[in-house]
Length: 438
Image 1 (cartoon, rainbow, N blue to C red):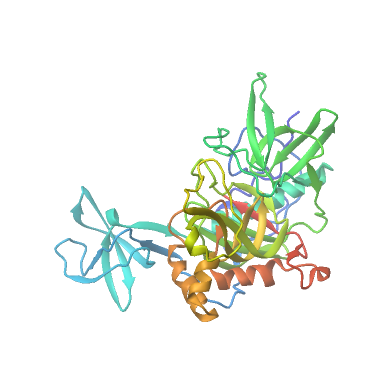
Image 2 (image 1 turned 120 degrees about the vertical axis):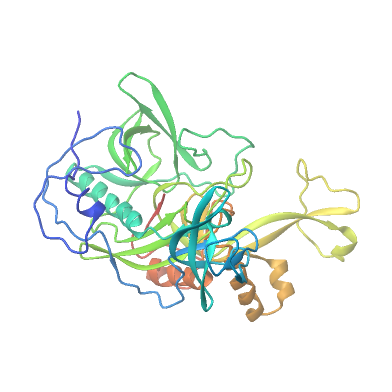
């Protein structure tokens, strides 16, 4: 039986929102951002509030909101034409602030140029040699509101809000593992089966950490919905854990994969406050040991002071100098006679785990690199230089890389931990924190 969700005017007000709204009792229908397979309804009164308000609490350096970068050094000219004088040259991956667009001299049959602020002058870059990124705070806030409505509708119907538990440390899939219709791989996921009215079934991999609403529990499995789809999925029973949402979820980290950035939202009263934002680097799928960062609505499971990544290198036996190391001989890594395959480690500070082995964390550095740098100041400078790749392309292994200072703010101040975990390496957040990836 179709149910009706919660919204009608949310589309007009919240999802296309002006700065301030009034309180209007309305019957509302929930707008699902990703999929709209079915519609359903439950009348309630909802206070129409601003989509979000900006109230920055992070005291560190914030990035440019709308910017360009280039994959190679490019000329910035004094007018929108290739005949313009060269004012300067970009650096690869350097963030350049956009101040507008103009139509100028044609390049590759395209006349669009970006007007940019660069150092102490205004110049022009042609669109064909740039990549544009932007912070879409309204789109982020829509996802936060969508979670509010999902929780509200579940409470009205006495459905339990739970979290998928499918974490398997160190798990890895074989090469070329098939994906579902949404592009998700099955690693650290739970199969969700959707059956349409014609009896045709579809598979969706529901990643560890996903927030679900459990509508029914049966001996053959559970029926659940997720915030980013109207479909009902059948999953294996006993694979979820109840979340205490009596006070709702009031802290959300929203990841925009297309623009490689994140917004940090804190709810005060009924209004979501944007308290910080930063550039990020997300995961890329190489069909082997690297995974795209999964999309969806997740709950932070735990935090760690450092995320540790093992990797393997071939080292000449004569260079080991009698040092005892952990040797590994696996298929494809059989060492030659004069070499040893050695396990080494890379580490990233301030890990916030949201899905399987997927963390939001600081800039990773290998132990060898840290040893060569020789001191804290040199390590900090290296991490700062590495931040130039943030906000450009996906390049990590499932995880989200974040600027070191900003990640410290997330780890210590935003997510925090329960008092009993003081001084511990592994911690549980002091309250619910959601991570939304879209």
